[in-house]
Amino acid sequence: MYEYIRGNIADISPANIIIEAGGIGYFIHISLNSYSQLSGKKDTRLYLHQIVREDAHTLYGFADSKERELFRNLISVNGVGASTAIMMLSSLTADEIRTAVTTENVAVLKAVKGIGAKTAQRIIIDLKDKLGKLSESGHILPATDNTIQIEALSALVMLGFAKKDAEKVVSKILGEQPDSTVESVIKQALKRL
Image (cartoon, rainbow, N blue to C red; front, top):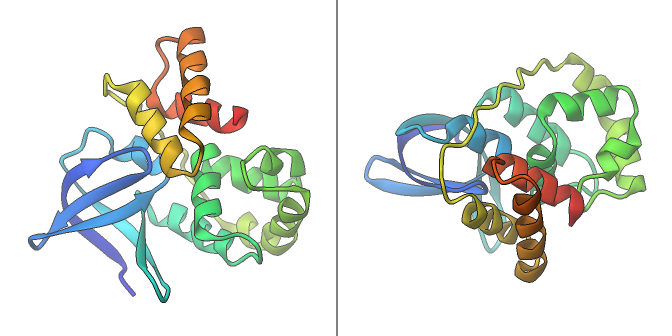
């Protein structure tokens, strides 16, 4: 298993990053919170989690080890896969997830796409004791890119939303709040879709 990767950021979007290390470009899935921390940097060190299946070897990257630990705790819950865990880490900050679990706030977890009442309750039951021990710093840096609509739409499509639905929601959000960042547009869209 890989612990981390250090290298140059060849490409980055709200849903994934390509890091060049040792002459090889690694495609790594990231959360919106990690994107916020990495946006604008030329090189980085990402903590990794690798999932090996018959048809794929998939890497998930995290700006800090505590976010990776939360991801690993989430995927340990029956019914929560890597995509759902990344969706949770993109919709809510790590502190919000931890607070929702420790205070047994099912409504906050249900607000994430793909999380129903039963899954939210299962997450709370399985992780309440574990997440009470984690400490997170929820520092998020603003995005500086001027292609907010394109990046937000791209991220939502990569997360599995229909392009037409995502376009409508992103356009509406940018119409209401034209000075929004990519992260805020995606977070609001995740709540509306």
